Image (cartoon, rainbow, N blue to C red; front, side, top):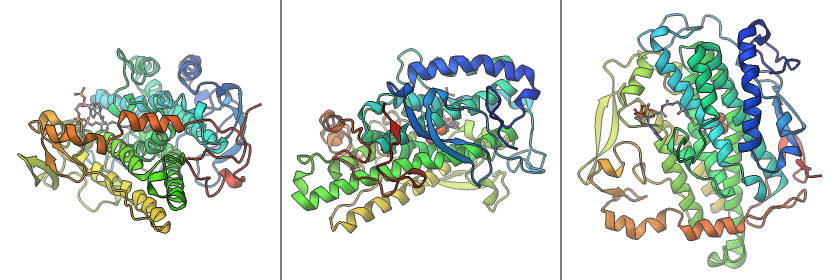
Length: 476
Ligand code: BYC
Ligand code: FE
Ligand code: FE
């Protein structure tokens, strides 16, 4: 169904047919816009940004590009086309018709999943709100804002479900989305990584590579949901997610390319002096963002996750392509654990460790981009290899949290170490205050079309076939 842009809230869900819901969402809209003004991007609200807007939800030509002011972006409600005769494809209800309404007995669980998903979206906008002040180019500035408006739309996607299907408590949850804030001492965002700072552009690219990729895996699992409106909204969100990860992968890649060029021109030790970000520093940022993103998958053993699956609310990644009974009653799955100071692989009930399975798939996906980054380094003839740190490195959630390891820590190479060795070495593994200060020091805004900061290579190509010196943001 086409998207109706005549409406105050653009949508393809026949919103005007449901006056109550329309009124409820129209009442939430000004609060959202106020949140966007106060907690969204600083400074650039009045400028024209070359943004893409969804015009239809089919894979062919859903996007329309044009210069718009961010507050005028048409945030709306877009669900992927319904799949005819869709079924619940896993869990205890496998084979039943997919639910068009919330199954009463799962209401609380489902709401909680939707709230957790929704909470991350505005959180990321809040985390990134200062970055516009130091963008390395107009191209990057535009990409940041594209990501921000789409994360804002992802909040709309979840708020639509809360308003549309959860009555009064849904409306309260929708309001609370605008009241929690990233890093707030009293009302923080729900998940750890979304309360971290994104203070510089290297962090931003790492975040969009690693943390938006958690988004991909979580959304893909929710897209399998037996609750059909959640499935359809997540399916459309996934099409937007691809661009966020592209910004991350190419952003980190361009930082690496610049480091390589400077290495070859001036020598390995001169990269920082010449205004680039050296590869060991890139590795430290990578270690940080990968480890906090691994935490987003929850504990290795989780009755929540087992229940989400058995109830048919949240599936596995590409559930319907997996060749098994989709119930997992007697299946086993191996997980890595510490037994004293040694890693052991133990088999556990596949339902119980379903978070770990998704984390495994995520980690493999993360590795693909790291290989492409290493090819850039190799092409420059430089002997350095970026690596994903060991999955137990720097973990706060689950069995590798220090509270659960008897105080032991794990190095990026997977060596089990005591607290003292961690204290001595963590500055070699994670960004130190000095590293962060150095990177932040490089962040100076570049606002001339076609100019790029010295610490990052220009992109290989522009957005939507525009040249790389296109005026992606009009600053006057
Ligand atoms: N930080 O049973 P457990 C995205 C809590 S990203 C803090 O292991 P479960 C995006 C947990 O809530 C995708 N707390 O957890 C990316 C529970 O709390 P309670 C976001 C955490 O439920 C970039 C307790 O610890 N979507 O879209 O199996 C930009 C025990 O946990 C954390 C989703 O996450 C943490 N990291 O799994 C913008 C999908 N981890 O009940 C957007 C929806 C766990 O004891 N969420 N806890 O108070 C879920 O599927 C699940 O909630 C989780 C956790 C996978 C996150
Ligand atoms: Fe999102
Ligand atoms: Fe995203």
